[in-house]
Image 1 (cartoon, rainbow, N blue to C red):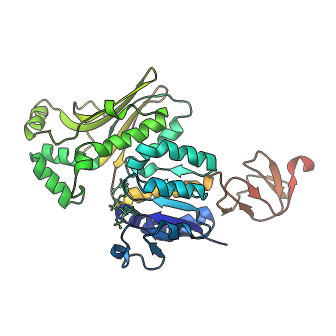
Image 2 (spheres, rainbow, N blue to C red; image 1 turned 180 degrees about the vertical axis):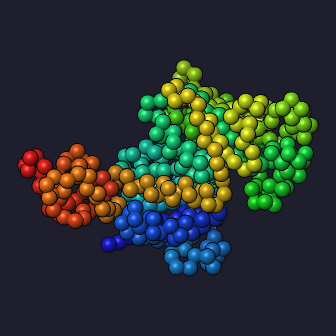
Image 3 (tube, helix red, strand yellow; image 1 turned 60 degrees about the vertical axis):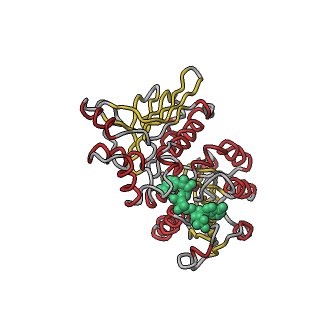
Length: 375
Ligand SMILES: NC(=O)c1ccc[n+]([C@@H]2O[C@H](COP(=O)([O-])OP(=O)(O)OC[C@H]3O[C@@H](n4cnc5c(N)ncnc54)[C@H](OP(=O)(O)O)[C@@H]3O)[C@@H](O)[C@H]2O)c1
């Protein structure tokens, strides 16, 4: 039985954590897939940086070498920027691979094209990690979307900005000192522009807009402001009123028109985002039926992000394209001495085998008798 073969693009904070998680949770993954789940190759820009870490699988700078791996099932993409990631994922989809990506800039910019192509080719494109790291926002919204109409989303989507604003409020730091602390704690990049100028939150909001409304507002018309201009005095003045300044991304759909803003706003204690402090992210969703929901948790970091990716991986078991999964079927009912089971195809069959082969949707049964014939 061959393994589920994964090609990993990027081996930084996220990519390396994904590989470690696949190793540490191999037993769970094997239970789900019925076979070993293996990182069969790692693609990076500069492989010299990774020769100590990647020792027992292919490490390459050449995409062609990754794609030459026989029977590659899944590409997990944890690199940065739109290109060459878009080109790599397009090729992977054409080759019949399922895609899992953490790359919010790519999904915000070219996600619609990738989704369409994946649909045409019968493969899955998953991107839970691209929005709010470990918080299962995408999965929850997909569940909610069947009947509910989402009218509004308000969210704290950038952990670095939230950490800086929290430190400024709690300890009276100025922006520059709080930023330095975030960098020392590993919460902010050496170049923090993406986070503190609001780009990171903006990309995540556009991903949500695509998912919820199958449309994005004109990027030029989105009011996007970061937190550089928030002063210690602003925060102090807000605190005197019992308020907090938070960096909030808002999406609204009023009569078919989608509008978005990403900016620092003043919140009173009554607002559900008021209590979201530190590096946490939170997403408040208002559905016309369910009312207001709030999801909160670690929005970044190696393990929470790897968690979202590996959960996406486990969910591929429910995919349409064959990944050759072998699964035990639990007998749901008994009829005399012969067990029978309701298949996902709608059929009911009696089983004459103690296990069946499954590709995730259809079950190949060694010997079976249609239930009707026996009834
Ligand atoms: N860090 C988080 O907490 C977090 C959370 C959610 C989502 N994300 C997203 O996850 C992705 C990865 O983030 P990260 O923090 O892991 O970044 P990172 O630490 O900078 O790692 C990026 C990795 O991508 C590789 N890479 C860059 N350009 C490449 C190219 N052209 N071809 C092949 N490999 C390339 C890099 O290889 P070289 O070192 O050889 O250049 C490196 O291994 C980003 O899209 C980010 O937005 C990150």
